[in-house]
Length: 343
Image (cartoon, rainbow, N blue to C red):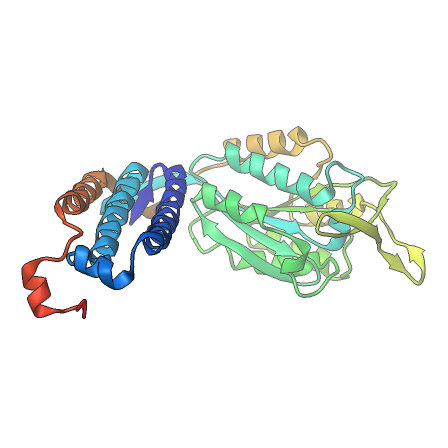
């Protein structure tokens, strides 16, 4: 396992193609200028030891040496030991509604981005708790399996979008059923499912599924985003608004249905929370998880990461020294072998 300490220095690799382009331009200019003043055959007699191949080889040594030095600035680190860490925490799974109604802009910037903000801030408040993410619309899909890697959870969360699901609609019951498969620790007594949606559920059996989850020890909390007044669903291409979603010629107005979300939460021994103000659900969930009984679980992770930059500095300096002492003229033994057909 490895880590990259300073990935920003990878941008320095842009120097390498610049050097190659400068070399090619200088070579072209040199050849063009020589042709103005002398014949090519005469030039070979005047400078018989000139070697294009060795000039290219010197450039290659220089670029390779420079690349190694750039990698040393990045400072790659290698994990030398895999150890088992005991942690205490609860399992928290987020079910994020990514249906197109979540693109409505009655809550700034829109319902989906508001939901992402809420989840991201809750993740920031988690300690050693495990987290998983489900996205759903007409169907439910696993976005991230349950994990202790909170950074990965936030990264995957940012990519959640309506085009990641094959069918539109809002099937909360599908998200509930998928969430059951996330809780893979039979000894975990505190299991939380947090649904973040505008509540436009298109299925009738959602309440029954939620009640079954409660029997399995999974508490469901729902967070509603959007307004009861509602808003049209914008249609955009490359970020530019081209109109609003219509049905039978009429503009579709999507409204938050808090009743559905509240019914689901109550059926699973949870609670409904208004999510239009980000801090309200974040503070509530933080207190909920803080006061919950923590179970001990084990995770394996690499430790004792050691710097490896010194190897790349060594190889880089070696190639640069070769470049310095490597002549760009033909040598006698190479001329005799004629390995590169230079005669």
